[in-house]
Amino acid sequence: MHEFLVLVLASVLTAYLCIRYWRAMLWSASQHRLSEATRELGAWIDDYQGEKSLATVCALLKLCPNLDRGGNRTLVAVRTYDRVLKIGQGILQSASGNVARWLAAERKACAYFAAVLLDRRITRTSEWYAGQITDPSV
Image (cartoon, rainbow, N blue to C red):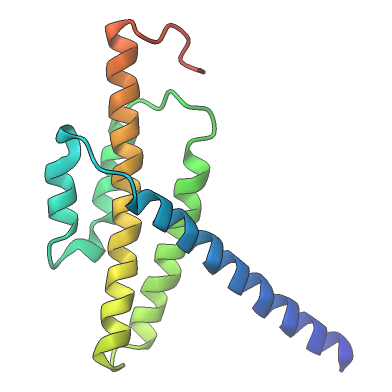
C-alpha cells in the first residue's frame, strides 16, 4: 500500500514539475518579439483559431533548414504540453469559460513558441547564406 502511495505522489510531482517547465519555456518565448519575416504568422496565431495552429507552424519548421544541434528537443517538449492541453480540452469541453479560455491561451502560447523557433531558424539560415556564419554548428 505504501509503495502505491509513493508511486502516486511521485507521478503527481513529476507531472507538476513538467508542467512548470513547459510553462517557463512558453513564458521565455513570449518575451521574444518576432521579426518582420514571421510577424504575419504571429498575427495569425493570435486569431481565434490560433490554438490549432501549432501543427501548421511545425510544418513550416520542417521546411526551414535546422542549423542548430538539438534544436528540436524543446519543440518536442512543447508539442507534448500541447497534446496534454488538447486532452484537457477534450475532457473539459463543458467546463466554465475561464478554464476554456486558459486552455486556448496556453495552446496559442505553444504555437507562438514554435513561431519563435521558426523566426530563429529563418534568421540563422539567412545569416548563413549571407556568409556571416561559416560554421553552421556555432
